Image (cartoon, rainbow over all chains, first blue to last red; front, side, top):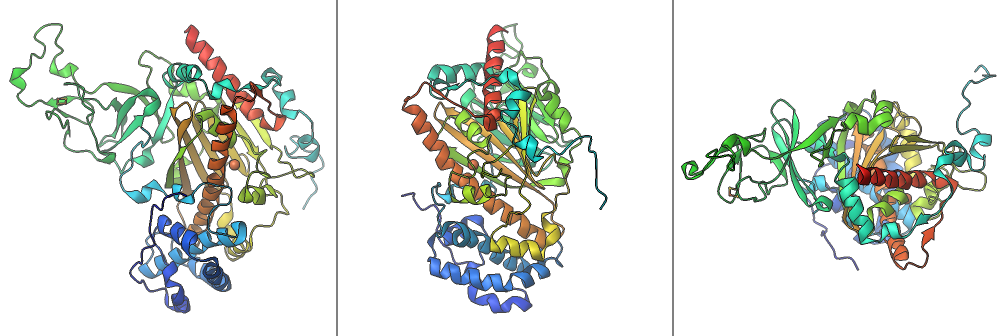
Amino acid sequence: MAEKTAQITTEPAVALPERFTGLVRFSDWIVSTEAGRIERRLTVEMAACREFYDAMMVELDDIITYLRTRPGADPSPQDQALLNLVFSLHEVAQAVEIYDQGAVVDGADVRLFTSVLERGPVGGTNG
Amino acid sequence: MTEVKERINPPLDAPDAAEEQYRWNRRYPELGTGPITTDRFLSEEHFERERKLVFGKSWLNIGSVHDFSGNGSFFVRDIAVLDVSLLVVQDEQGTVRAFHNVCSHRGNKLVWEKSGPCPYLFACRFHGWGYKQDGALASVPDEGEFHFGSDDKNPGKDGLGMVPVRTEVWKGFIFVNLDASGTDSLAEHLGPLGESLKDFPFDALELRHRYDVSDEANWKVILDAQNEIYHLPMLAPLHRFLGGGAFATNEDGYTRLLDFERLGLHTVFTSDSDIEWVDTPMRTAVAKAHPDGGLTTLPIRGPFVFHVLFPNMVLGFLGDFMFTYNVWPESVDKSVWEIRMHFPRPDTLADRVIHDLMKVRFRDLLCEDVTGHAALQVGLKSRARDVFVVGDQEVQIRSFHQNLDEYMERGNRG
Ligand code: FES
Ligand SMILES: [Fe+2]
């Protein structure tokens, strides 16, 4: 078993854009780091992952249509929260659509793949 | 639409071309059809020759200008296979220089931080000698007690700067060459590959993600496993899904290279995708809501493009997404697989969704590969066979190993 390198952390609640406040019941999925989103994908039960996936699929068209109207740089905190929610969907969809479980089947621990740019100063890390 | 009756250059994926048996061997008969030796992935002796004759002599990509936090910043690059630590500096004017990260006093590793803005002087922790961004020794505590320039055995202070390493920047990619006596330029090394990408707008892309993955395999096992798409329909669930048509396959479901070219020491192959291929429900829904999000705007030579820059770099494109690999040997059977992902600046937040989708899929795909690399190493290590065979759809691998052998032979003579 690979050792756990990150824990699910509860982030301070961030409001979603007004028209998507119906999704607030999924606010645990508003996670600002890749490591945190991967951790939820790996540890939240599949039934809950599916529930999140199903609910997001219903809203997806509206969400993307809305995000298409928002400039690509400097999102508001509400828009960033919505993005982070969608990014969690991306992780969960791998579990639901490809693997039927959180972990990569016949693969390594996906926690190996958390961007080092999220971890502070980077150099040539080999050696 | 007007029917194009005669095309001077028929599309490379025309079915007849794709199904031509031994197509790549016909194009490059000099590569032969022989097997690949097992020993080259296992033997300490072979690894030692690679260390000396390849990594010690070749231009090596150590990152890009994206790794700086701006003008007047630095990063440290340790290269285990060469037992060197480099200090790489972008000065206030934007000039990039690399030095041995070594203090001229008594040899301490000079900078211990990984990266950051340049301090006023790079100060050694041991006795405080201070160096400028251009490497010059600027300050020596208790200087009067040293014998600088007193005779020809004692260099003057101006001869005690950090030792520079040959450094060149191509399209924002930083290369060093640790062979101080070498004379070949980076442009010569890149040759036709550099030429083929000389107008590519790398400026349009920004670095978003970087993964440094420990990989229990010889560096060439990793490169080879990435440098073919024959395994796609087989290896693991996501590979199989994408092998169903995200990468073009023939009627039997086997991938076919769209094109393959040898470019001096380097190679490039491309792959198409099947038009009828249907993505997952979530990705299909996103694509429907944001139809222009996945359009390719950069001038790439195929839907999937994979360059191997000799010896250990990969530069690839999947539409507007650019990835690079640097495979760094740590020992004969252990490597660090450094993966960087680049995307265009997003016009809208919907573009960021598209980019994250690409990242997550690609990352999981490589996560499947890591297990494959380790399994290959285990199998090779058993030395059950002295050689392994390579098919025509793996011509890239054949080319890489031939280039490697020839490079080492030349190095031995020279
Ligand atoms: S070793 Fe660096 S100042 Fe002495
Ligand atoms: Fe693969």
